[in-house]
Image 1 (cartoon, rainbow, N blue to C red):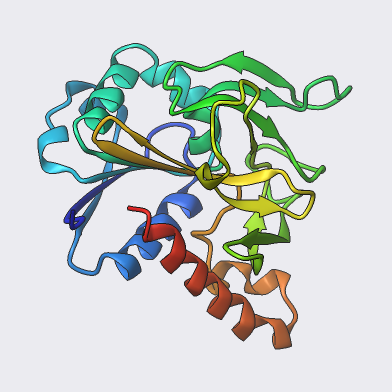
Image 2 (image 1 turned 90 degrees about the horizontal axis):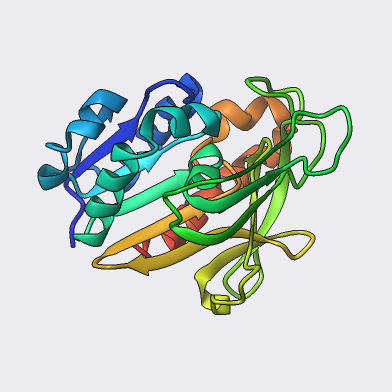
Length: 239
């Protein structure tokens, strides 16, 4: 199905940078699509479902998502996906879409969050962070990291506190996990749910060279963006 209409959640918990670059990335992938922001009240009303192909939950912080959407909002999202809608969750949007969050579990003196979530598009544990140093609403712990996908191809992506996908119930096949971190943990998840499709990502593949350039040496920049574009093409082929 051609994606013609996309909504990006932009309410409390999202970060403006993540919303902006998600929109920029999606414009590059779906040049003819209508792309707009959506807020919690409109989401809960549910009228957007019939005219939307793809819902995007960008990076930020998961707890405000849960606070505003748990209950009716989650029910609406499940209805959207089951009836053929597509869900893309990046970083916080992936934590929110998993069954359980383990963030800084048993790590003293760190922001810790170990809670169940109700959307459950990934029926497992969103475990993070994979790289230490995370500070909420900050770039203090942000790094450019290697990610490996399809026949061990390498791409480098922006990472800041994202999750890995732990299949604690052993219910998924290897092809549900589209990419891995350097330590072998799952970095991206894909599934078909009802008539819909879901992609969840720990790393921020929406952040391009315009944002990441400050973290790279000059000779690394062209290869970074070339590999990221190839990776995007691969990921969005699942939609």
